[in-house]
Length: 259
Image 1 (tube, helix red, strand yellow):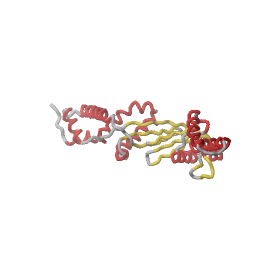
Image 2 (cartoon, rainbow, N blue to C red):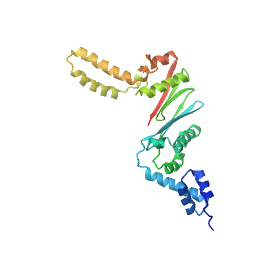
Image 3 (cartoon, rainbow, N blue to C red):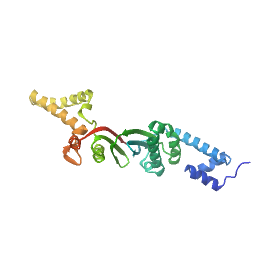
Image 4 (tube, rainbow, N blue to C red):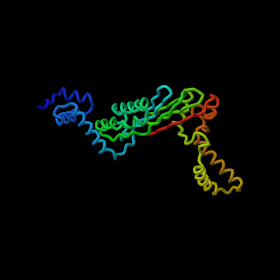
């Protein structure tokens, strides 16, 4: 004999899953009142819904940064709209995934992420996809999160966490492509040389001057794109390189993610 589907039973299932009353009622009816079966039905439904929405573009989302000891996790989660990115279920999911990555490691978090994400897809009705996840290790780590849409983590050798956070804030604002000039590859130099050569070719200056103009343009371009060469946003009188030198610090690692 099947169990009667009472409002108390529906409420218990809803409190456990957070899924709508009607979905809980249908699952309990299908399971003939068996709570375990109803949970399994809802889990399968979540997975089916997630599969149907998987090809929908998840352009929005949020990022978070969590630190424990000398381990920091930067994690991004994507959804379809800004509305859902601010939804309590979505933000809880983001934080829970980050906590799992922090305690169990990124790979373990990824393995279990589908079971965590699918029920929230069912609740929000949007495609939700795990974005990138980074682990940064170090004693001196600073981070900066801007509007929940961009996050930067900076690890230093030397200096202090305040300097690391200042550098992270600067990276968020100025978005450098390189940390030092040694990272600029030959392909990038070649491409920019070709572009600036065309600009300089139109000048009626002597060849020697054109050569200097070309060098100046290339140097200026890459200086603006290189972190240690950029004027520090809090004090444009000094570069990030000078700021680090003054504080006896070196950049160990920089991770940035933008939605």
